[in-house]
Amino acid sequence: MFGWQNGHLYNFSLPDDVFNQLTNNDFMTWSKMAGVYFRFPTENYQDIYWDDDYKEGESVRSWMRKKYTGPYCYKGNGEHYLINQIKVEEMLARWEEITVHEFDFYAKKQPEPYKVKLREATIDQVMHAFADIVCYELLERVPVSDILYAKNNDKPDFEAVRKYIDSAIHKIDIRNAVNEYQSRRFGSNKQERRGGRYFDRFAGRNSYWTSAGMYPEGRHRACG
Image (tube, rainbow, N blue to C red; front, side, top):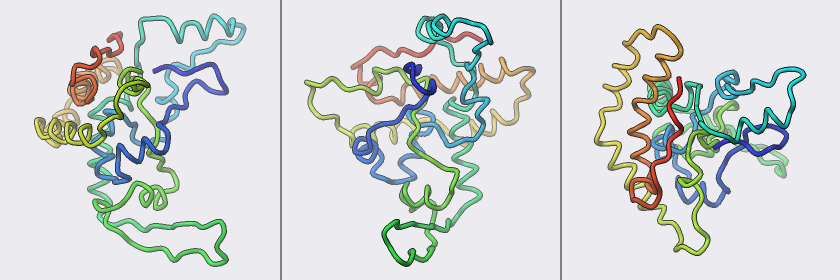
């Protein structure tokens, strides 16, 4: 998915009601979808905006046109499935409990902070515990057909999506894959991207709509 011509190239998220129905506002449910549908929060803006390559004096129209013509390549690292799961594993290993700081604009006295186990936390609680974490962002590389739903079709079965992803995840040893990836020495960023793309094949199969045969598996063309 590449951005429309607006204030910035990228701003992708699901409507609130769809997001909540898909994730059940449960952090562990969301974490399984990190790298499949959602991007794990990051402040590595150089990686996020890897194709902000506008050069002074270049025609803005010509530059924008390149964003909408093939081949559609992803040349960052942070959206690859395994990279997202590495960040999930690191977070779970570091934080057994989190302190939630909720804020009420209308209350004279703010709620007292409280602790909750990370594995039992809601997505809202996680975002209230960490000021720099936002869980709504969709992956840029996800095909539009994996996100948009035909208007005249039956309502999407979010429970089926969750069950499918859960069953597919059990087919791969994430921790073993993480250890294998981290033990490798990549000679260049290009080699590292290729390593990340290898596990994106699994993430592609995790996409419920693609795997159900509703849409073709339209990944971006691998290009360096």
